[in-house]
Length: 104
Length: 227
Image (tube, rainbow over all chains, first blue to last red; front, side, top):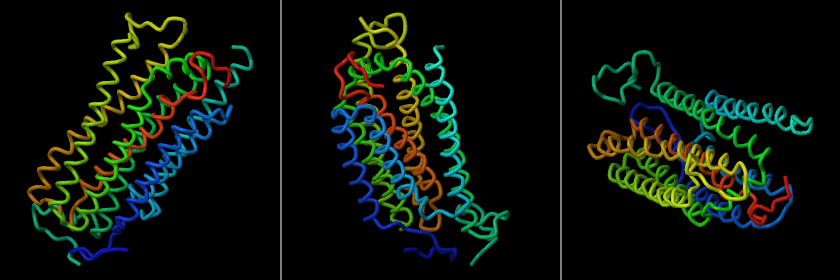
């Protein structure tokens, strides 16, 4: 769905239904993440909590922040930014978590 | 298509270094995302510190996390999600050139943002009362290194709250401009880019809530054995 503006180019207008869908998803997942945190899943509690948070974040980035309809360059920037964050986490974890096993 | 229009003072006009209005808009979006990526890395440092210290002092983190108020945290999560919806609707109204709706939705977003900060104030006051604020008066009997958790709690939620204060501050002139009818379906870049900022702040909280409030929720306080 797109609309013409006065300058003649088109830009995307996201239907309100999509926003309400994301809103409902975020609300439901907030309740789910609280309830699941009380269930003993052993080492998987953190994993489940983070999977829910990542799913919520993706919904916000794609729909609320319009990345789904952004051009390729903008999408590359967004993906690159989060990839760099992942590098920061993974490399630091590889270092610090190994130190514990080595007895430092 | 009226490229290179020279209507001075018309914010919708295409500046001379852009070929089209679409290119101008894309450049603004890209620039905003570049800024947000620096913000992601800014908060990323805090999250990295959290990951390391939580790994080393897991039991202390669980015990300290149990003192946070989950109902208030969950309520604030819902408030922020609502504010993200109203912000998205403000941008939507701008795209359709509905001046009154932009104003209404911006006002709602500000109100929800203020509600979040109000609840945060109640939570912070509670931490002061119980001597859970890092510093000379800190006290958490029986648990070593609990101060590390609270340092990260105040650092992360404080930086997040600061972003909300800035956001509400930015919305004030935006609201006045919207009232004057500055934003039309031809020109709403500031509203759109501010929306990106506001949603980003929401995303930070989406991660802060489970990491700080729900940590070890299935364990009894202080008696955690899982890693």
